[in-house]
Length: 120
Image (cartoon, rainbow, N blue to C red; front, side, top):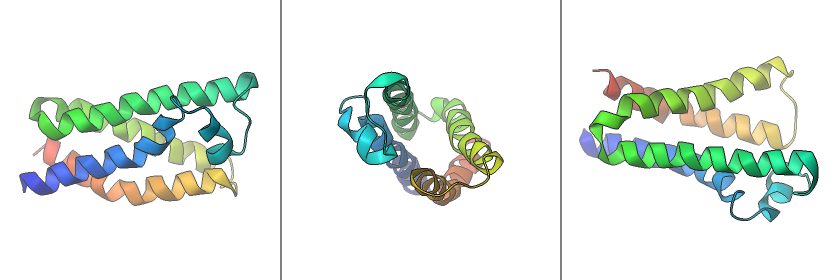
């Protein structure tokens, strides 16, 4: 069961890896979100990459530290479910945001599993 738990944490880290890379490669902002990396929105999206790097690191850390799993699960729940709530409130827009929403919805399965493992 522990190997499956580690696999679930790794899959959650992978979900957050691509947006995290925007912190290091600002050109990804254009590719991922269709916005130039310059200007206010570009800077915010690059900073979003830094926040996703933190989420990714939390998931990786939780792979190896049982003690970190509850906090990491909360961080990932806030990130993923939070985005889905915002996305629904925005009227389920098309485009890049829909891809993010679908990815987060697929990620809910390993997220539910790691939450169950963290609290049982």
